[in-house]
Structures are given as structure tokens and as C-alpha cells.
Amino acid sequence: MSSSSYGWGRSVAFVGALMAQSVLAQAGPPPFDVKVINAPANAVPVTVVNTPVAQAVQPFQQRLFFASGPPAPESQFTVPAGKRLLIETVTVEVQTPPTLVGEASFSTSVGGVVAIHRLKLGQDGLNFFSRMQYSGTHNVRIYADPGTVVQFTARPLTTGSALGDFSVSGQLFNVP
Image (cartoon, rainbow, N blue to C red; front, side, top):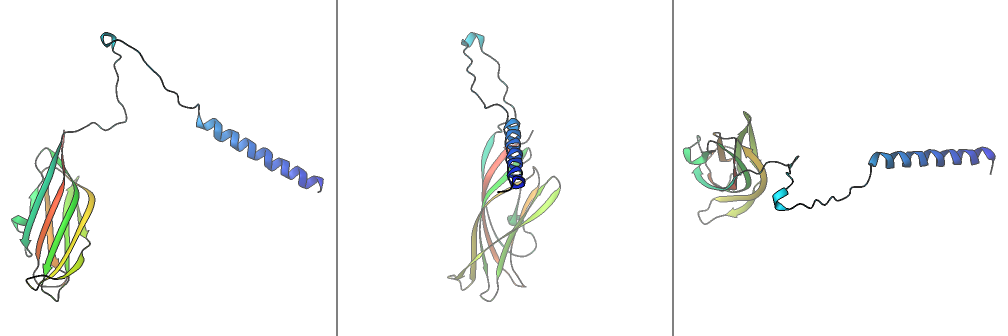
């Protein structure tokens, strides 16, 4: 082995050791537990930081059943004033004439921005009424602001009529 290759290897090892030492120095000292012992009369005040403030939560559930066409009152609901809606599950069933393909979506508004959420549906086949049935259940995390309308749509991909049946569940949070 030549002396130049030996020197090169030592240089690489030296640089590697410096880099490892630099990484260890950036990591800082290891964490340790602190135990504070006080009597209830001398309690130490504690402030929790970097944690979201717990809000009052109210379960939410809504079912909407309607025929397609212009937005009907039964195809929408308004988020209560002073509450923010968190939609967690949407279950949908769409029925169309046998030759048509159904689709479903809903819209929400947060901060003045309206978003349309399309729902993937599976084809279940013809139902008892000889209508093609499509369905799907979706676990989501979608918000809607207080006082905004959540609008649901069920329709065929082309022209024609459809029936929509949506079940929505989630939580309502108090908004300061």
C-alpha cells in the first residue's frame, strides 16, 4: 500500500470523526426528569404551552335524502352559529336509472374558501326497484365554518335523475 493512499484513508477517517462529533454536539444534553415535591398549600403554578386549548365538543350526525335537481333544502344544512364542524365520516348511496353511472360530492367553506369533495363510489348492482345502486363510506377530516352551508349533490355523470342518501357524522367545536 502506498503512503499516499494511507494518508487519504486517515483523512477520510478524521473528517468522519469530526462530522460525528458535530452531530452529537448539536443534539444537546439528554433529557432528564424533574420531580417537584410541594404540599397542596404551597402548590407550584403550572402553565401548559404548545398544546391546543381543549374545546367543548358536541357529537354531530345528519342524514339527508333527496332527488337530484336544483339544490333542495333537504340536500344541505347550515353549521350552527358559534360552532365549527369537523366531518369525520360520510356514507353515501346513489341510485340512478340502470344505464347511468352515479356520482356524489359535497361542499364546505372554511375562511371564505369553498371546497368541493368528490366521493368515490362502488357499483352495487340493480336494487329492488331496478335502479343501479352505488355506495361508499369515507373516513375524512373536513372542516366547515360557523354559519356556512354544507351542500350535498348526487347525480348521474350525464343527464337524468338520481336519488341521494347521505349520512354524515363528526363533531361540533365551540368557536371563540
